[in-house]
Image 1 (cartoon, rainbow, N blue to C red):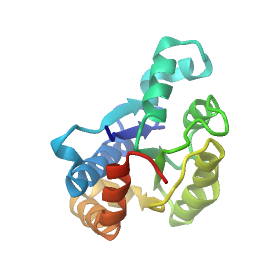
Image 2 (tube, helix red, strand yellow):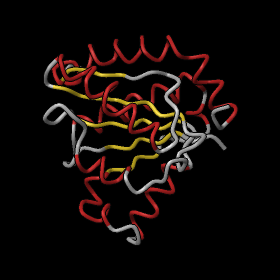
Image 3 (cartoon, rainbow, N blue to C red):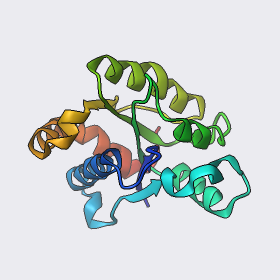
Length: 179
């Protein structure tokens, strides 16, 4: 059965990054018909903290299995110092080069500066996801903190982003894997 997973790399919980990523995942689920089957699963790395460094920690093992089983994975991170969070990097470092094969990942970045939106999403996060085997067929989504905080602006941006990819998302979820 196809699944939609949110991986939040914010080291704090609750966070605007995580809340926005869940909002995006719910819009994807609604647009693709997945909402009738199951709600998005959320993996909050802030709840694991330093355990992401222990490959034998049962919570980390379960979180990695959940992420690896996703059909569509929203990978959310705030931009810190021009990059994704160290917590997210440490978690993803636990995967081998093909561990996320068949997962369609969406790099989702929340940045304070417009200069960091493309930098973090396309130059840093997207290649990291490819390095562990994930594909990014839907492209990325990067927003400013001010857009994320404004529910109307966020809704309009998410709506347009999902609408532009509706058929591809639905086809990916129908297949359950990336071809």
